[in-house]
Image (cartoon, rainbow, N blue to C red):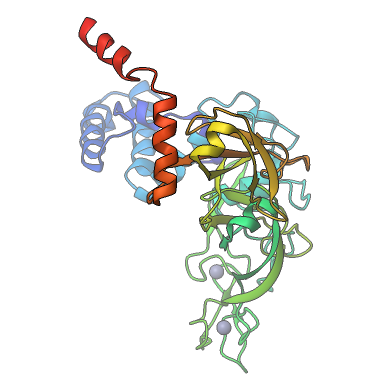
Length: 397
Ligand SMILES: [Zn+2]
Ligand SMILES: [Zn+2]
């Protein structure tokens, strides 16, 4: 059977089982249908009869669905393309299916070998389809590969997050093992070409009009066999590389945010583009300032007389000398004042505001003179009970 069969035939429907059927259910359904359509059960039928065709169909469906690995491949192929692929017959050109921008010719071992073009789809299939000679007997892939995306994290001070900063990040990514230069063979030995696949790394299973292949079982798709594995990487050929990069963190990032730095991931192979770097941001809280989106917040204590009489007070800002804020006479506790342009830097370079909330202080200790003046003040403003209305309202509800 060919790849085309995978895309055109609904094996589940053939066996009359749901996609979620267990192995046992599939087996049961197959046995029942096989008994029903088996040539022995239909004496008199010639080889071209309907029941014989049906028996073949059922057997084919069971072959695939009873093999967990092949069933998975089948499901994946169909999930990717959808069932009933209209433009499939045109494979080799720039056929697009399901909105996926790729080249079927590339995918099925055809002609187009544009570096990078079929990469994304190739990754999804993970070697399911023969990649048309991308693997050479030397075991090296000449195709340009995009570098890995890398995850990292950084803890910033409050000010760094508000103003933006440049940080050094130590990044670890996978690369070739340094001890064996990625061959997986112990130093001084060399891998040999796999005799099973003759170095192609691929084993053909069924050839219809299209090459349908899977990684060679003996060499696991590498095309090479290692008799004496490298002790450093256990023969995998893979290692870790660490490098330090300078990453620009834009102004205004917040705690818990994840930012993407394009092209700062692992370098590409064979001229492919670098991957991206994702940085998880942690921001340490500030003892004085808080954040509310693009605004900074601060609570400013004012005395009772400043609030009552009005005053010009000094308010600290995140960077630089304190600014003067004029509070009008009769300012209530909890009122918030806006100091323009002293907040968080926005994307366009402008800044949010500083929101200063006043907290009226009540004198904790009074000397005789202060108490005397306050008592005088009390008598001067003795204009009735401030809670009278509240009590009235509470009663009338
Ligand atoms: Zn092989
Ligand atoms: Zn090694």
